[in-house]
Image (cartoon, rainbow, N blue to C red; front, side, top):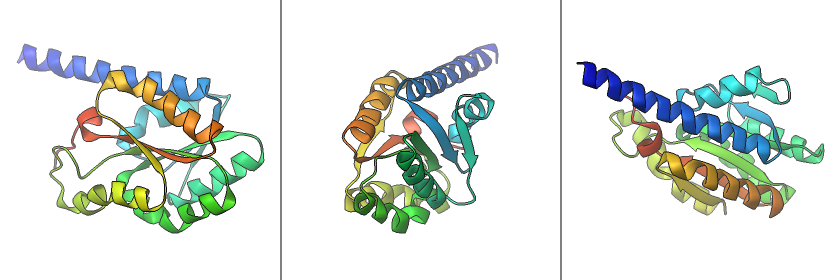
Length: 182
């Protein structure tokens, strides 16, 4: 059993490491507003944003509020990120249609469900619909499957969102965050 415990400890260290690196990268890219619906996949990012006096951390009642906050942040000269689970994307479609019309940059980090190793049948529908929905909404989607891809992908996503003014979704796959037991 000691080997199992050591393997679990190493996995937790890697997870915390990439999530901390992701938070630091977002801040280095000028993100000062984090909006979220509570989600275990974003736990470290949420906890760090809540503890950081230099950023605004906003808990949402539903994900589409994060789209409106991103528009407001842009109008106020700030950069924001919406943290959500893939199931929350379905709540945002109408609001996301306003991103192109409003011509504001948008960055979201999506913790995926319904893909690699998913055992919860209720997560499968929206998890499988994420990419087609983002494509239909004319989003740029970038996917992360390994911890060493997190920082360069976050830099690329932030550049495309904030310098090119595009809507960008960074998909944190279940190969990266792990599949939840069901």
